[in-house]
Length: 365
Image (cartoon, rainbow, N blue to C red; front, side, top):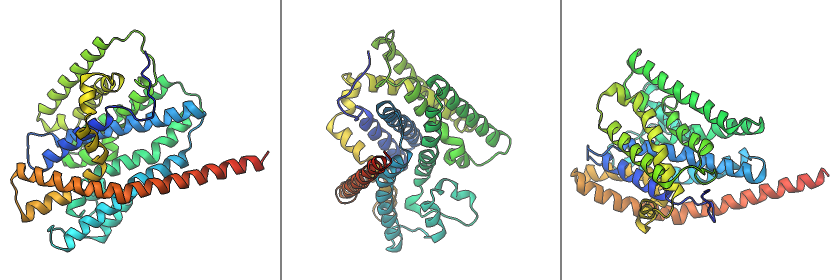
């Protein structure tokens, strides 16, 4: 049976965002046993699934995809909090809260979403509180290119199975390229971990699921909840094994492909069965609130954490508590005074754009 919704909000995704951020926070704050890198991989998969689902829904409802409107929505969502986080990190560095060098070339690299390639630029150092922006750079490259490619495929009438297959080829190519970089060129692991060319498949696995087996849009008449649950449990088992393996060659090559495949049945079950215990837990007030804040939390937590480590404590547990509390306060301030006004301005811009298109259409009649 098709899983329908009364709105575009997909239940469970805010809770998944919260889980991903808490993994990132725990690992960054010094709990070495927490796989913060896996948290980023979850963010990537979620972005690929959600953005592609929204584009597919737009195509289904209207018969077209407005790439320009997509860019407007993304710009108003991403840029205002990003600039606030940058100002916070720069102020912390200038005030001595962070012992970090500020290079204007590095700030320029961030503006052009090149943070993930900064280490390959001679003499360039990203300010300490902003280094997690490498993952935002990967996502921005995806946002820039994927809607155009997807729109071309839709307008060309390419079947969904072929769309998914083409994206699958890109995922295989990314795996091969990682193996070449690690095995032949012997690059430092961080080059593979942060590169768009080496990590784009972590996003595309989510896009493939949105296209080929989307639990909110497609029908699966022969699929039972028991089989879905079994596949999700198997996916979790595979994820745990992949996280536990410490061989660096595996970790920087096959790990990302395996995790991308294993996340699919987990996401599928959570989204398809909103009444399940798992999804209801993910939809509790705490998880949805943290999930709603997750973008702002991700942007500011590194600055807060290093300030705490510099001036208060390096104890991981205390650092987590203080970093989470202060970051949540900053995220709420950002939500009220930055994100909400930006969303209102975005809606006005989009309304004007829609009115302009309608006026032009009438004048051409």
